[in-house]
Amino acid sequence: MAEEGDVVSKTFRALVERADRKFARVRDFPSYGRAQGQHYFQKVFKAYMRLWKYQQEHRTELVKAGLNRWEIGEIAGRIGQLYFGQYTRTSEARFLVESYVFYEAILKRRYFEGCKVKDLGVRFKELRFYARFLLVSLILNRTQTVKVVVEKLKALVDDCNANFRETNFKEWKLVVQEIVRFMNADTTFTIASARPFRYSAIFDCHPNSVQDVARFHAKKVLKFRDSILMSYHRNEVKFAELTLDAYRMLQCLEWESSGSFYPKHLAETKENGVVVDYSGTSGLIDMKLVADMTDPTLPPNPRKAILYRPSVTHLIAVMATICEELPPESVILVYLSASGKPSHINASPVESSGGPKRTTKNKLTSHNSLEQNFSSPESHINGKKGSSDYYDDYLWLGSKGNGGSSNLYPGDIIPFTRRPLFLVIDSDSSHAFKAGLTWCRKRRESCLTAFAI
Image 1 (cartoon, helix red, strand yellow):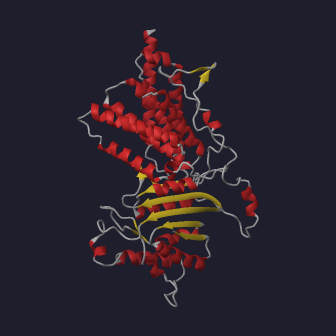
Image 2: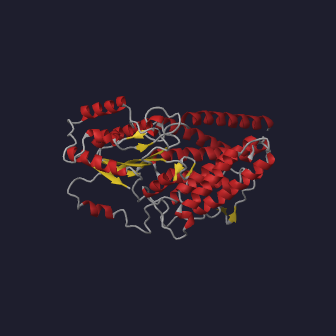
Image 3: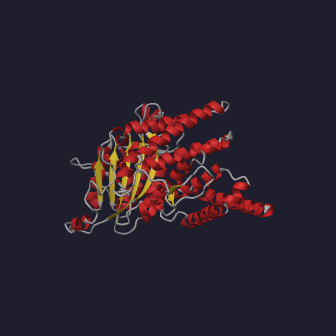
């Protein structure tokens, strides 16, 4: 029996190491693009599902061999991470709900809480679990869950400060401050009767009515498939890398996956009429529960690339990638929230002294690029804009040591108007984008809509 237990334990550890190696390969994959290593994700999912099934089948032997409860929680947390990663790449609600199911199971079964371990590494695992669960709960609009997890996170940070005095937990204190500030700013938490930003069958018309509206369009109707949400402000309200502006836009671009049939408080799982006791080392998580939490009749959510404080170069690269992969008969929404003027703290000496906002070399390069892609521009006559006016106003995406230009000009967006584009500029310089790109649309007759806030 002892030899059999050793074999089971060694097999389990080998499966853990193999799954962790595969996980490391996909952890830092970008969240945009339609074909970013999909085959790798399938391999990682397969490895973790095999590991999960193995620990369920051999749980008794593994417990006798010294398996800790927090180790099962860590495996479940990795699976939750994988599902959330797939959600950020596909925006499919089922992946977000799957992630929530695993994280909620970890919380309810107290995988980390009941171990009474004085291991700093385990404490950090628990801290990261709470932070990830908060992000998933925020996006899924589980306000009560957010409030519960915030209290647990506060208590854990205080406990860590008391028991590990030689370790600095300043970053985790900032995490607590971020989520509290986010909750105070978001109407979902401050106004009990506030309706959700998401499309909800309770408040809005049924999706089937969209087909009736389509017949009133003289031209072909484009499908909303992709979006880019970018926010760049100093001291903006955020949690992790999700700003309040991007969060609200994300909510507006999704169907309410819960609808009226999703229970806000999941009942405890019962077996033969008896509530299951989770005080022991259990690995039972209902992985089919998501079937009862999603609505298959709703259309798919558009893909969303959420960019937190990107450089101008990175933003343009993401836009180019998504526009290139945009399916036919589809439209892309781009939401840009940023200041129109650089901060006096981070402004360069040239800009602060009233010098040129863009170097002559960069301006000439962009102007020549426009000349190659479009017909020769009209001069600024009779109040009409010429291509040179595309570089008079801008959005500021600057930061210290960023390198290159920190300004996003209307002219930088022009190459992307070859594809159907819905542009939302939330800035004090939005008028420049609306006026300039509307002029470009009239010249090229592209499917561009510019909306200034």
